[in-house]
Length: 295
Image (cartoon, rainbow, N blue to C red; front, side, top):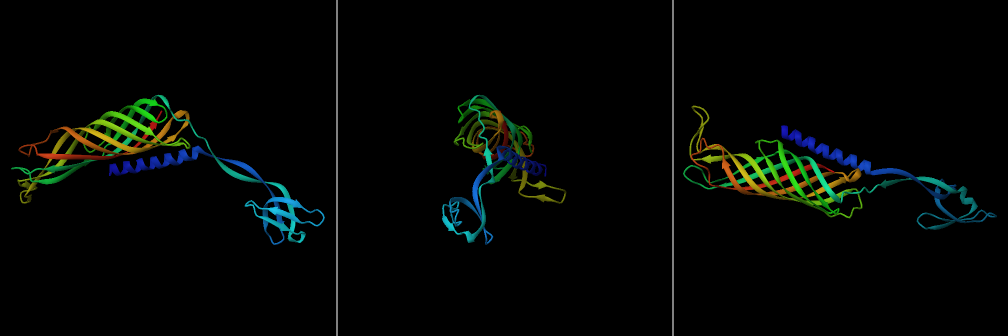
């Protein structure tokens, strides 16, 4: 329930941010356009350009905004007005500068869904099975690096879990992002890459060749046990980001990324029930949604 509420608040924050930025970037201004106007006897009001007027007989040659030319006699219209101003609202979008040199910082929060699919081999204690474990850490994210022009950013990044099912999640590594849009709007499009070391703690459920007693008269065979495991991984992520330009080269960024992790080492910290560690092959995948402030 707590995670669901956090994700809802996270989504509302992103949507609110997007609306505020778009409203700030686009400012309405009023301009005026001039038309000659003919008020017809049949109730029509024609806007366009009077090409010629016969002052003796009242004939008018008239061109409408589409370029169509019409001729009217004096009996066709009540009166006409030349060079009448009409207001036209026009949206003026200020194209703001983006940071293209020097040191840059990103700080914010990220929500990662980390899934581990386990393939477990059978032995004298564990049953051959496919198991699954997962976590949803809400992390503080920070990165620092150098801009090489508008398009390239190279630096270091770090994630530290603030809320998670299991404590102790963190990630440290390198970051590169490539900004590929033409800078014709205040929304930047970029592709972030990260290579990082991950520290993850997870509980997984294992089916065992033993009896699990729930009470004196209630039991299960085969039984099961939960084992806590600490993984040290190397992770590679790629995604897509949207940067909403603010003043002075600052920006608010939204990122969606996919991450694949490769296990470097693992340690079982809870083997009270099991006689030995399981022979397992972990398979880590993750999806991350991030909201960052860049300056």
